[in-house]
Length: 424
Ligand code: NAD
Image (cartoon, rainbow, N blue to C red; front, side, top):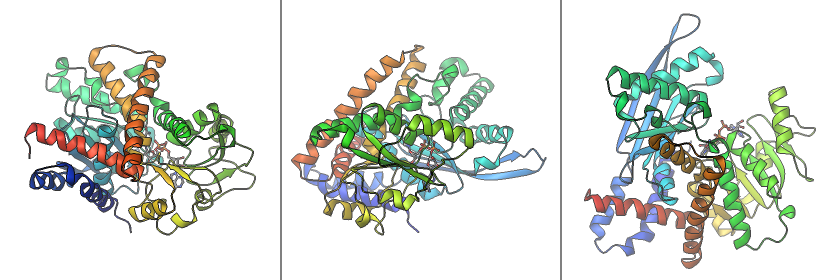
């Protein structure tokens, strides 16, 4: 069984080897690296709710707060039966690198609850969401830790959580000190959410795709074929914006099945049909493994981690991988792909459009303002392309993978903040 936290530490050690020469005080540098291997705080507890049947049930919950040296902890909350402590810890490290890679003033955190939310009724889900906030208590807040949605957590869940946070503030007579809604991002539009947030992660990935097309001098966008694993929030919006931009999305999949059409798919129609029937429907279904190994130009993992492994990396035919999911490629697979000259745009850059727009939402909440969608997207695009350009230039200058270049930029920023604070 793969340990994602071990992968995250291995990645940090790899980048540390490259960064060390830049620091005169090697001992201080190594102290910073060993500090960054472990989350600053790991919250762990049981959430008890009353089921509709009247019975009580408990669920294991985590929040890993990795680093807040560059700003409040930031990261999503995942509701999934496969959540583990090691996964949550890994995801919190990746959040620190992600917020640093795109240079927004946040640290890194991640939360998770071991639960299959599809087995809960709406009232049970609401109880669980509110219990998660009570479990964290004063460990979260607009200037402390600002959670957001992740796999299986929705804007509605963020609304319940923000409301529970506000209730706690009222109980402690502190609700007037700040806008309690700024405690969570990814909220519904009717409750302090930001225009553009829903599609921001997928759209941010397409901004990166467009920049990559310029760098690699791709001639005709309509000839560039894309396969996307995962057709949830991220996968759908990536597909929809890629098609709007003129690329050919030939395959998409979800946890049950995949659809393939070499002539190109219409993501909007597929989503409408999925909403009607509750599933992806395909004349000749494609397995997830087949999707990963399709003869396409661009492969976009947009579901869960560890799907590109030492076992299948040699079989992948795409020449470019855009990691929209967090941690989809194991370090062993990464090495194989690098040797085969496959360009991998790492998760901490590719999917940073989500957290960047979360940042815009937080800024709006804290300043009491409300931006148009155009304003949001006008800020998102330069933020993503500036980050991409800096990382791409370093990748070329140092003849390294894009992942290592992104890590170098990000980890250096976190270490610099540690030094500036005098924490090491
Ligand atoms: P989601 O729950 O909306 O969608 C997940 C999709 O993956 C669904 O279509 C599901 O059917 C599919 N899936 C699940 N297991 C699968 C499997 N074994 N094989 C193939 N498909 C499978 O989640 P999301 O918000 O789209 O997140 C997807 C990924 O993107 C996660 O790794 C998440 O951490 C990452 N991410 C999300 C955001 C965001 O803003 N939502 C931001 C950054 C990163």
